[in-house]
Amino acid sequence: MILNRVFRDNSMRNFLACFTLVLFSSSSLWAQLKVSFVDVGQGDAIFIEFPGGKTALIDGGNSGVLIDNFLKAKGVTKIDYVALTHPHSDHYRGLKKVFENYEVDHYYDTRAENVDAAGDNNLRDLAEQEPGCTTHYPKPGDILNWDPKVTVKVFNACWQTVQMHDNDETNNCSLVIRLYYNGNGVLLTGDANSELEAEMLSHFKSGLQSNILKVGHHGSRTSTSDAFLARVRPDHAIISVGATNKYGHPHIEAINRLTNAGARIYLTTAGTQILTIPPPDKSAPGPGIPTVTTEPSVTAAPKFVPLALTLPAAAPQAGDLVSLDQLLDTVAK
Image (cartoon, rainbow, N blue to C red; front, side):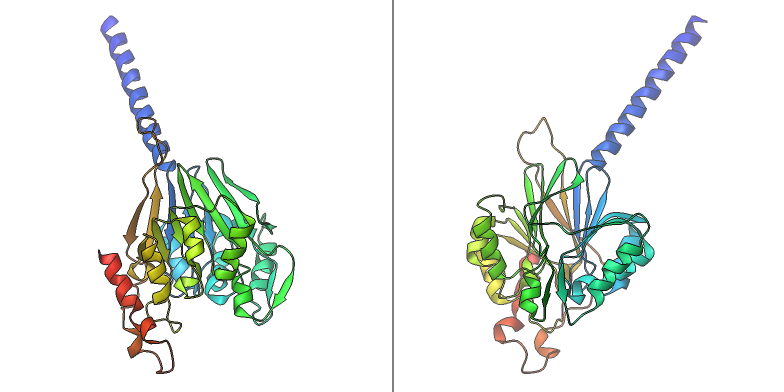
């Protein structure tokens, strides 16, 4: 009888120890912040997995197929927060498929009206029709309650209705968001140009510094100014771009500015770029060390072809044509 009791006690202790280990391992996995810069060709789509288990999707790229394939491969059925940075088709078009195929709890938008495109208004209609979905129009300085352990701050948003035709004006209405977790800042800039960068530098005297930067406007020459980089001070720079785009993105001038600032550059042409920030470790004080890895695209990424072979002669200048070659060399190193 005594041996039986001892055996039962030991079995219970072993069970509790194993259960605690599994619980600890599970919580450790949940406690990291994971940001996937999805390969959607020429466009933006950023999927965020928070330490507490909630998810966010910022932009959806130009095609619903690509973002849908990515989300399905991850087993996603619900997205807690969906945000559109600004109403250009390479950011909003894929989100239509998201509202069709996934449960969405919260939708974040600007009040920018691109009068040449109806797709952004259509997203607001889809959000209104989504059962239980709440639409938000954040303001600069707002803190978004997306995760109790991650500070999510808005640095730009057009929260008042404004109608526009000009692409630069629309880009500069981009929702700009910064995530801060375990000593790491992740600045997501949409298609912000240098004018908006200057406005943010003037308005916010602190808080922009981020060791991870999602480069504005796919590496356009009109984004990522020296003054902005001097304040942000990125160690890692992710450029979401299509391999054979007609715009000459990323531009050699933006590449040079990033390189001179000491940032390592990552391209979504190589596949989805996955940023992982570990949870705090009491045994190792200080900020967690972020890692960026490349995940093969769910839909095969287009093979890189030099832009000179695919664009009309009147397209980008010579500096544009070599920019992707140089960036791919940078990533390879």
